[in-house]
Amino acid sequence: MFNFIDWGVIDYNEALKNQEALFNLKIEQKIAGKQPTQDLILCEHLPVYTIGKHGDDNNMLMSDKWLKENNIKLIHISRGGDITYHGPGQITGYPILDLQQLHLGLKDYIHQIEEAVIITIANYGIIGSRLTGATGVWIDPLGSNARKICAIGVRASRYVTMHGFALNVNTDLRYFSYINPCGFSDKAVTSIQKEIGTCVPINQVKQELWSNISKCLSLKRNKDTFI
Image 1 (cartoon, rainbow, N blue to C red):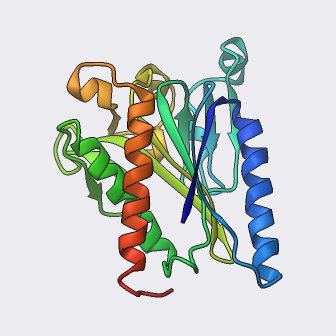
Image 2: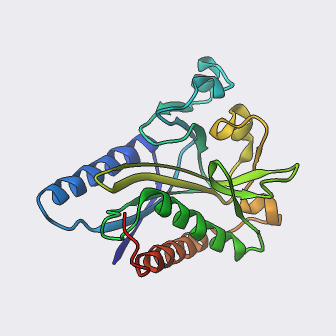
């Protein structure tokens, strides 16, 4: 059973604080022998750049002065992955889940999140796929115009997850030109809007994501695979 939570448009630091509170609570519950709830949180952020614990600061191509002048923060966080952008028109998902209850290892979990995004964008006629050696969902990953539509970066402790994914729906893609997205300097970033040429209702995509994530995780669980 998944709890579907919509935080709307929220400042990144506030969302991070809320995430950490839920994450720590679930770990405490597991230590106490209790089963935590399974929360699927979706939101949008005000413009912000985040960089993972093994990220390279050189992948931010703009100066501190530029960031300050444009009122954009660069925040170092505990997820995997390199630098990415979050902003309006992008759905950021934070599944705060106990993978043990779902009988999932971390790799299988990431695979199922990717699968849910692939199914979601297929509703708009977009063919998404994976790129070997890189997480996330890509369009034409082996072609000359490989482009990422969804980034994924996860942290887990005691099989409890936090952080998650960022799906570009109607995102202003100019912000990605100021970084090497996810550490790649030779691959582009795209959105549903750019691929199909029209704006898409955010709430519609949220509902589709919630449905597809819950289905993908439940189907995987029912196969009785374990960590």
